[in-house]
Image (cartoon, rainbow, N blue to C red):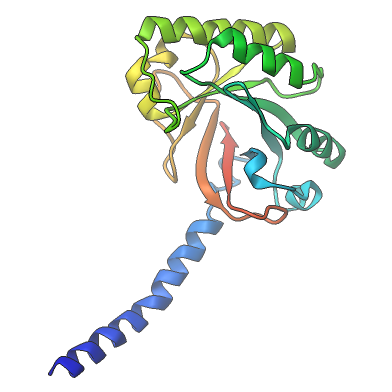
Length: 225
């Protein structure tokens, strides 16, 4: 009796395997429709290792945001990605991952020292999300003051207003989007974000899309139509 039950369960598992595989392939290949969102791209960090940006462009990458700094830690691949996206003809901008555990002044100094002031670059972006390595949770007024300070330094350096990439949990806690009038970048897989008080400018639609030119899954983003 036990043997028959095990055989039955094995048969069911084998039957479900093709369905699971098809779902996985659909998930890693999914992107918002080009008819609605014609401009699509990626945001990457040094964790991606070396990227073939020419292949990426051929696979539909129209723009790329490149992490420059994580708190005060320099991204080891930023300079190469900046140069290579320019050679590939991909619009590119710098991304700063804000840390609640470091002063905005210290973070800004590293960003300014790393990121070229290039007139044709995309506006810089500041990423606001909670991180496991930083458990600090300062009061809202202190966080808004620090974000504004970082914005001021980055915008003075770049000569352009920056974007704010804000996760739902971070914005729920600190309500940054309601307090600071900048273009917004929302994060929500498969469904366009609706947690901001005004329309978003960029949507991070997937964090695990597989694209030619990349050795690992990438964050896939689209610009608002």
